[in-house]
Length: 388
Ligand SMILES: Cc1ncc(COP(=O)(O)O)c(C=O)c1O
Image (cartoon, rainbow, N blue to C red; front, side, top):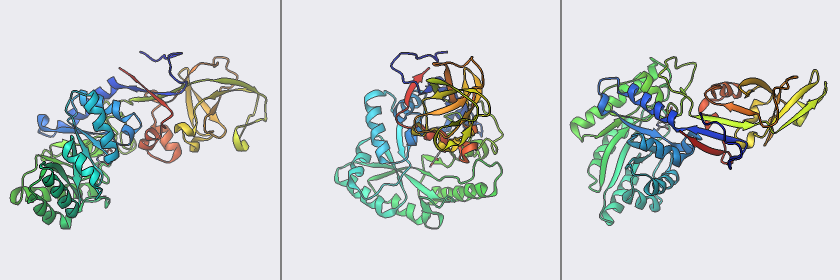
């Protein structure tokens, strides 16, 4: 295990991203997604939006492409362009980018869509027409996927308008409609009536379009929750995000285990140790007082790195593999841990904020959030160190 980067141009605080774990998670997800009858036919669109859920978009996406992910899902065109540039320079695999965000009237993106490996999601007939006209004007075809709204009420054609919209789009000569997809609102819950309704209605729409209007090479609706709970062989692509990074959408609701492990370990080192007498306060606002003389370990990570201030007085950290309580307000650059009278803890000792040995679920429970937010929040000043 290569956990030591002392003195090697690595900051005290860094996020170790284990690409081997990422590869194993992708394999576990692929196996799970394929189990419903069409094992070889299920493509993976790895969702790498928001800096690959904090893991570093370019490196993570390239690794996923190398490991065989057919598609990479981005949130918007800014991400798509950055990724496309990076892959063109650094990746031999021809993974495609599916932009899950909205294409707007800004024409600069039309050109990118028709000239690069980016597929656009279409949720508006007017925009589809503009893209079609643009593609025609430069003698190219734009590859698009149709986005259908079945329950999030976020983005996509509403079911009531979808059939006619696809009929209209199917006649646009410069658009190649490659796929059709929707997105679940509650798929992390097994056997959920709302998710079942979304699946049923989406499937009915796609089937009737396939009988009467056009065939779709790709049909997809499942995020991680869908892969785990709502497999259906009619669909031939899945869009996992959180599971690739080693977490279930909600540990309490998803009771299944497919063997995935956290990819990111947020690490730091003890930078300073104070001997603090009893009845002294720690950190801003004096939110914690010592009851007896203790040693306080100061760790150079704070909310500026994405270690939430809501963890104040509530979280634990692992120092040399053992859990210690954090005490006092989390600062921008520091958090303090009460190590009692232990002289086992000293400057330079290894700290884990979360990772395989202390999953980020615990922190999301404290902050009242979800694990997605804990990992996404690891900020840009935290160096990502890729290991294999
Ligand atoms: C459209 C879409 N598909 C797939 C995903 C991946 O979801 P998850 O991380 O729950 O697997 C997301 C992320 O929220 C999404 O917005």
